Length: 135
Image (cartoon, rainbow, N blue to C red; front, side, top):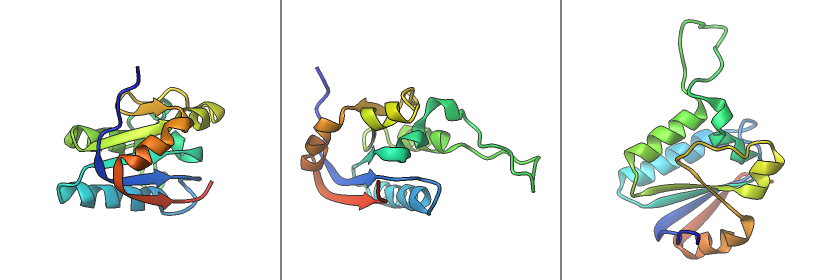
């Protein structure tokens, strides 16, 4: 039986390609600001945004050739660390159909993979919902 969706103040819906715009940076900054103010936040990623938390990303981003000695965290690690810092107030969900279609079915353990037909439950569980990006 699926777990009930926890009540949150905000649902951030990440749709579309995450690396063509500032979508990821904006979403993570907004989520962090809300969490810093004590809000409970859920994030639903759909479309290409499901790749953000793919287990295949590992812990580090590819090396920056202009600074090869410096290591940068992958987006998956940033998300994992953010969830670990706010375990009872940040919930990250991934659309199963979108992730499977993009070869990102294996996700980091901190996120929950859900079928798209339960998305309405997430909207109902949030006081406010914001769509970021387009499919």
